[in-house]
Amino acid sequence: MIELDVTLVLVLALVALMAGFFDAIAGGGGLITLPVLFIAGIEPLAAIATNKFQAASATVSATFAFARKGMIDWKRSRLMALMAFFGGALGALSVSFVPKALLQACVPILLIVVAAYFAFSPKPDDQTRKARISTSAFCMTAAPIIGFYDGVFGPGVGSFFMLACVILLGQHLLQAVCNSKLLNAACNLGALSVFSLSGAIIWPLAITMALAAFAGAQLGARCAVHFGPRLIKPLLVCVCCIMATKLLLDADNPFAQWLHRLVP
Image 1 (spheres, rainbow, N blue to C red):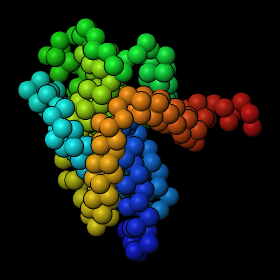
Image 2: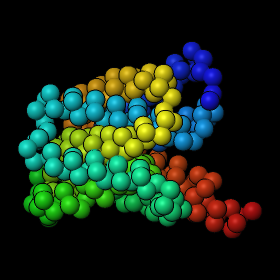
Image 3: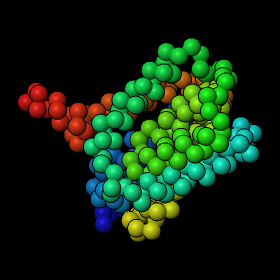
């Protein structure tokens, strides 16, 4: 186990604060914190488990902030959240059986699709559209599937929930942001319930980062409510593109390996 000094803990807390802010608005906080935990020398399982704890704190914090504003329909969303929770737990249990190479190849493409949709769609930010599927169908399909992905891999899950709420449920962008935070929190907690049993969480660091992420998410949620789609839409597009680029350039990504063979 790495020895934690005060400077390292403070730096990681600052990173978690920034990640919580961005995650509350557009998702992608885990793609900020997890690489930094690796760089800090924390072994992979402990880094993933510790990161999941602080990520859950950020999403729960954002959900709480939106709920205080009366912006979450609990009656409609609670079953979605429950199914996302079970999906996250099942994903965490299945993490060793799902081929990571497939996810590493597909996820960046999906993130680019999300960014393109929100960048070029005709005002998805201020329109409530007709739902393409029922809430019950969403609970049985999108909620557990995206939750499962979060338990296995994770990057971009908030953006995927957001897009699903817009396209499948016909929600306007701010409403989709609020509901995506609830669903993201649920699958984070589901995955965390499994990871916590492994004993891999570095609790002093996890708690410190969680408190910072909680504060950052509160600030991010307030900015999202105050500025609305003017802030959410461009930030969402930027975060998705940055996440996609980061994943595509990762040395373990099949595309990066193919490019390296093509250009020695």
